[in-house]
Length: 182
Image (tube, rainbow, N blue to C red; front, side):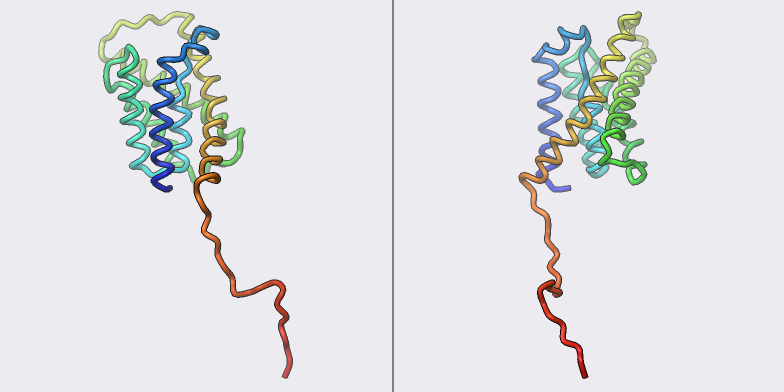
């Protein structure tokens, strides 16, 4: 992965967190906030290095926590654990298949808030958990499932638009005549 893609992942994380906090469009419409960092973590786990994965978990978690009611740093561990689980199995996952991207996005968007709630409960915080929390969790799952293929398409487009592929030149030309004889 090039430095250009690494920069774009961090820029997308920053813009995603800022957009979630500043633009209330989906939050007002669905009554729940969609978290897009787990969807971005799926792409990073599939295409980036472990160092970039840890950097996204650290920076994305800190940015998210600084603009939310969470204690600072509580989102880092869930993001990293989910990213690490995908990173270790990425050779077995069909990363170019949209169905696999949707399933991974939904699973990641389900597990990250669940681990975060467990961490918050283990610190002794009083949480407002009721049936409305289930609705918010389902909206987050659906939003992550929809956003993951969008991130994959966006970053693939970016890679094709601004990156270049190394062409391998062969010494064989298809229009060349081969003379055989004695």
